[in-house]
Each structure stands twice: as structure tokens, then as C-alpha cells.
Amino acid sequence: MNRTLALVLGAIIVIAAALLPLWIGPFYTRVAQLFFFSAGMAIAWNILGGFSGYWSFGHTVFIGMGAFSAAHIVHRLGPLGDGPLSMIVPILLAGLICGLFAAILAYPILRLRGIYFAIAMLGVSQVVGELVNNVSWFQGGIGVFLQTPVPSGTTPEDFFYYIFGGLLLLCFLISIAVRNSRFGYALLSIREDEDTAMMLGVATERYKIMAFVLSATLVGIMGSVYGYSVGYFTTYTVFRLDFSLNLIVFCLIGGIGTLFGPIIGTAVMLFITQVLLSRFLDIHLLITGAMVVAIILLMPGGIIGALRSRKRQANQVEPVEAEARA
Amino acid sequence: MTEVILSGRGVTKSFRGLTAIENVDFEIPAGAIFGLIGPNGAGKSTLFNLITGYYPLTGGEIRFKGEDTSGLPTYRRNQAGIARAFQISKPFPALTVRENVRVGAMFGRPGGSQPKNVVNEALAIAGLEELADRTAEGLTVGSLRKLEIARAYATRPSLLLADEPCAGLNPIETEEMVNCLRKVRERGTTVWLVEHDMKAVTSVCDRILVIDAGQKIAEGTPQEIVADPKVISAYLGEPLEEQAS
Ligand SMILES: Nc1ncnc2c1ncn2[C@@H]1O[C@H](COP(=O)(O)OP(=O)(O)O)[C@@H](O)[C@H]1O
Ligand SMILES: [Mg+2]
Image (cartoon, rainbow over all chains, first blue to last red; front, side, top):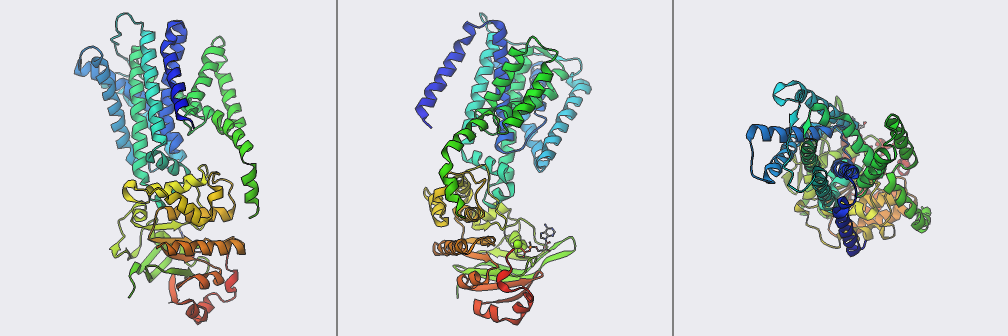
């Protein structure tokens, strides 16, 4: 595709997003913030689930672990720097902790394939959630505070809007870099056929672990920022099955394994649930569920998949005939 | 004396009591097109699975270029130079033909050194240029078999294990495949070929190894093999040409 055009478009979108809070109210700033947060995590989920085909049903474990790590780092180690550093350092450490946890977990759990891995991750998220809730040291039951050093002259809405926006951009750029690298091809080949990938020289174990650790680190970082943005949270605020499932739904709707799918899927679903259905909170889940089923039945490849197959149909009449001779 | 690229001593594999390969010895000379034949279930695919490290050996040893391969994971054996084309095609369905081949080119060597034109060369050898930008999903059996070879070739192997690349192909496609394997050999890759079509095997192979029920029963030039009473009796009741499934 045209690189310059993509860069110019990208720059315009980033600048427009940077100016947006000037003329939308706090409500929509918060919706946008939720969108950035969710889309960033969907992208991180997609690096593992979409590229390598290892669907995790328990990614909320990294949101929770990120948030609680940041809180305990701040409370137990005291301030680790002044000004912005007092927030940046705990966030990075939280990401590191999640990445390490994933690296340790990877060895046993990434040997499981398909639905077994998915369910094992669900189990991991439940177990860790229960531990954080019941082991008093973690204070998951009574909850923890995380105070944000919001710069003067900024509202918390705007502050987190920019942080989550930046993180979304970071995740997106990382995802592009991964997809176009050797690492990305390794992940795709693992998704398509892991045994064949091995036979072609792909060090499948190593690349799976790398994808898992990268995904966990990114979600951990976003989870810790989420912890800051809510200020006070318990186990149930951050270890949430619906977080885990939403990430998958967003990717499915937009187009799993694609670069833009997670962003588009998140945008569509949040627009429907937060904007269109915001006045019908009682039937909101019902309609969302029905929508998900409908979209998946009608567009198995998600929105991106549907757009692509339309394009392919237009292009591919000839080669199909060439194939027919056999 | 020609150099031996792959050798096996007492190669044995059992699956919970069933001995699929029993005490098989072999020496594959570098530069050859070597044949491997035997009735269905004889253990041919299993032998290839042992050479690529997909299954661990129960007994014996396999040496590649003089080095013991035990302990090397499958991907390292590929990077060392052993490639394999599957009997049942295993494409990466959602990727294009070119991307399928590119995976082989990218990972076939440690560190990922990748000559620029190896993908195109592999596509050309297999005659897949026209289909390069199609997704592998929905290719015909013939094209899928070519893709198996192209992808394996792109890893720049010194030994290609081709497991029934002609199964299910019509005579024209079989001819194309045989020519393709000849080209692979001309470019310096030793080929070990499993094939049921005796006409194809005897025309293309320098030497042939015959196994039956997991055991080596004969080895020799194509002329020696077709005249060997043990080989004839292993195939008794099933005309040699019609073994293909
Ligand atoms: N993974 C396995 N588990 C158990 N038995 C196997 C396995 N793979 C192959 N076999 C058995 O080993 C024997 C040889 O099979 P195979 O190597 O596929 O034969 P061929 O390729 O010569 O037709 C068969 O009896 C088959 O059932
Ligand atoms: Mg076989």
C-alpha cells in the first residue's frame, strides 16, 4: 500500500485525536478514554490470539495483576521518583511483573493447544483473582488506592485521555512492527499449522513465549494505568471475566488477526453499547449479545474479513479458472 | 566413494507395543534421488517423522552429515538442512502461496539469513508463479503438492524428504512433479522420495530402499528392486502400479 498516504492519514488522525478533548465534553472524553483503553488491550490480545492463534480467555489476569502491582509498589516501596516518574516507574514495573509472570506461566501453559490453552488461561485468571481477593496481604477484598499526580491545569478526564491514547498508539505501532517482521511470520505460521511451522525451521516454542510475554506486558501496563484512572479498586474492579471476553469479542467483530480489526471492532461495539444503547442499560447486554451472534454468523472474518472477501471476489475470477484445469 | 549425507543404524520406533520401524539401516548418498517404497502401513512416513525429529527414536541412531541428530528439535534439524514435504498437504491456508513459501525462506537457516530471490526460485521450480498471490486455501491437490515442495525447497535444504508427492495426481501432474524433483536435485539437494507409482520411482531414482511391516527387505538399483523376489512377494496380490491411495 501507499506508505506516504498512510503516514499522512495517520498523522492527521493522531493530531485530530489530540485536539478532540477541546470540544467534546467530559462524558465523551471518558467514552473515548474507554475506547483507547479497550482498543489497546484488544490489540495486545490480538498479538497472541490473532497472530499466533492462541486464544486467551483470561487476559483480565494481566489487567488485575498490573493494577494491583502498581498499587503495592506505590504503597510498599514508597515514591520511586518525583513528578511524572512517581507514576511512570510503577507502571513500567507493573508491566515487567506481568511479563515475568507470563514468562513463567508460558512453559507449562503454552504446551496446551487450542481450546485447552484458552480454558487454562480462564482458570489462571480465576485462581489469581481468588488469591488476590482472599490472601489479606494483597488487600483485594477491601481494595487499594492509587493516586494520580494529575498536572495542574488538566482535568483527570483529559489526562487519562492522553495517556490511554498514547498507549493505544504504542500498541498499534508495536502490532504493525510485529506483523511485518520475521517474528510476525513465525506467529502466523504457528497459527496456521504449528507442526508444519516447526518442520520449516520456526522455533515455535520461543516465538509463542515471546508473543505471550509481549501481550501480557502491554495489558499489564494498561491495567496499571486503569488502576490509576479509577483511583480505588477491589479484586472485582479489575479481575473481570467480562474484560477477558470483551477483548475477544472486539477482535472477532473487527477481524481477528488483522491490524485494524481490534480497533474497528472496539469502536463499533463501544459506539453501540456506550452511545446508542446508553439509555437502555437494562436491555443493553441482551442487545449486545444478539449483535455479537449476528455479526459472527454474517461475517465470520469480522468487518475487515467481509471487506476483504468482497475485494477478493472482484479480483479473483481469472485465477480460479486457471486452477480449474486440474 | 561418494559422501553419505544421512545414515541410520538400527533405527527403531514403537508406538505402545506396535513396532512401526524395526532395526532399519540406511545410507543416503549425497546428490542422489533415493527411493523409499513399501506397502501402505509399512512405516515410510514414520521413518520420515523420525528423521525430522517429529517423533523421538525408540532405538538406534540417525546421523545427518556425520552428526548424531538425537536431541536436536525439529526446527533445528530443518535449519541444519533437512526439509520435508508432507504426504497429506499441510498448507498455511490463510496465507498466500508466496507467504507460505516465504516462511520457509525466512526460517530455514539459523539467524534468518535469506537470499533475496529464494522465494521466487522456489515458486519457479514448483511452477507456482501464477498462483503466488492466491491464498493456499482452495488450491487443487496438484497445486498443494507443489506448494509442499516449494516451501520445503525455500528452506534451502541439503536433503529433501518427499512423502508421496505424486499421490492423487494425474499422469501429467505426476510428470511435472518428477521434473520438479529432478530440478531440486540439480540444484544440489539430495532427495529421498516415497512413491507408489513404480514407473515414476524407477525412472527417477538412483537407488531404492524397500521396507515392509517396519523392516528393511531390500535395497538396490531400480532394476534390482523390481526383480527382487522379496519385493515382489511383499506386493503380492497388489499390482505395483496401483498401490497409490
Ligand atoms: N502416531 C502414531 N501412533 C500409533 N501408531 C502409529 C503412529 N504413526 C504411525 N503409526 C503406525 O505405524 C505404522 C506405519 O505407518 P506409516 O509410517 O504411516 O506407514 P506408511 O507411510 O508406510 O504408509 C502403521 O501401522 C501406523 O498405524
Ligand atoms: Mg505414509
